[in-house]
Amino acid sequence: MAIPLQSLSGSEVLRRGCINAQSSSQTHVKFNNVAPTAAGNTTDGTVPTNHIVTVLNIIFCEQGNQADEMLTMWVEGVHGSGIYILRSQQIGPYQTFVWNDKIVLIGGDSLRIMTQGTANIDVWYNYIDQSWV
Image (cartoon, rainbow, N blue to C red):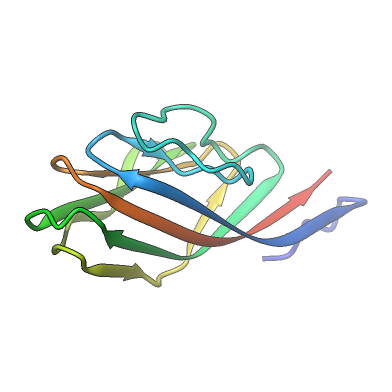
């Protein structure tokens, strides 16, 4: 998606982020080049005004040799209550799950991740951040 024509300046930057040791606490994925804290990060995950974020992929890797874990991922934002885009996706001990579908977020949206039980899942995500002023 292009930066709106009305703008006088803008940028389009390829970025990445990570979450270390995701567990059952809800974590807001951050799009500000700062790694979120997995244990209950519930702030600073909203896409800023005048930004469009296109999530290219998300890689989940189970690190704790636990029993099968269940991943959940959803978007909250300007549309109202949460919209689930991944619900109870199973990931086994030392397994990797790759989400390759693109997700487009606009200002006011937030992407959230959690597991159903205690877990130790590392998360790596790649995205394009488009902004204009």
